[in-house]
Amino acid sequence: MVTLRDIASRANVSVMTVSRVIKNSGYVGKETRARIASAIEEMDYRPNEIARSLVNSKTNNIMLIVPDIENMFFSEMVKGTERILREYGFQSIFVDTDGIVQNEKLFSERALSHIVDGLIFYCPRVDGEYLAKICRKIPAIVVDRKVNSEAVDQIYIDNKSGSVRAVDHLIHNGHRKIGLIEGPDNVLANLRRKAGYMTSLHKNGISERVEYIFSANFTFEDGQEACKYFLGLKDPPTAYFATNDLMALGFIQEAQENNVSIPGDFSIIGFDNISISRLISPPLTTVNNPKHRMGALAAYRLLAKLGVSVEIPEYELTNQLVIRGSVRAIP
Image (cartoon, rainbow, N blue to C red):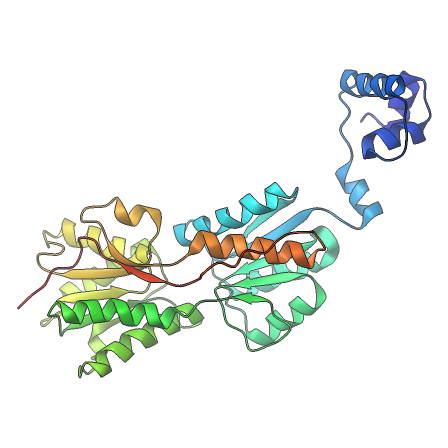
């Protein structure tokens, strides 16, 4: 590995002078600076970032803890974060926990070992007390999770209102038998979306039916299994609300493979408005979540915590129903 001493020897200057040029600090004459730059290029010098971080106690690395990077909801949100971090000279370290609480704890504990300057949790499943403990020890932002602690800097929008809007839309289109395809019960966003489903039913005088609720884990395959389950009922719902788009998309594919028409036989609404939801046939009616904005806001707020001079934008974070072709009116 080429060292500063090697560069200094080639350019016939002191190590201190080479260091000033690399750090762009202190005065170095134009001719000397050019000679050092030439030596750096000729010897293909690369600074030792690990050693530099040990000296400066700064890595310029940010850990992004994600439950499932294959889920486009998270990948689109992370893209909003990563773009801003990169713009300010920070690198992202992605961690996929597979939605396992123990993995979230493992990687957040590693973040405390000074391998990163800060971290961002996306829809974490660990309990609020643990999140508060981590946030007291390292600059951190929690996205899409509400925690009752002043120690936790969080970005959160109410998922319940979007779900009420979605189920109301089904009811206004004549549907009274409405199924729910929900995710894990340890994910607050899912619980709020389920609460919205219940609220809409009750305010419209509809009683929930236990057999109309299918609990799963937010995956495409779960949507397929949900469709198989509902097709096996003697009296299946005419419409469905899935608490994320991936499950809705899996439901639609399985229905079509069984010659069931969407929306001819069943109507369905998803949640998140991931990019692929508008590309399928029929295009999915869904609740739009401001994923990119939430991800970008997380980056800006973390940068501010790290002492970077940034202007934090005042984004309007609300969800809206996006009406497409997966719902039809019935008598």
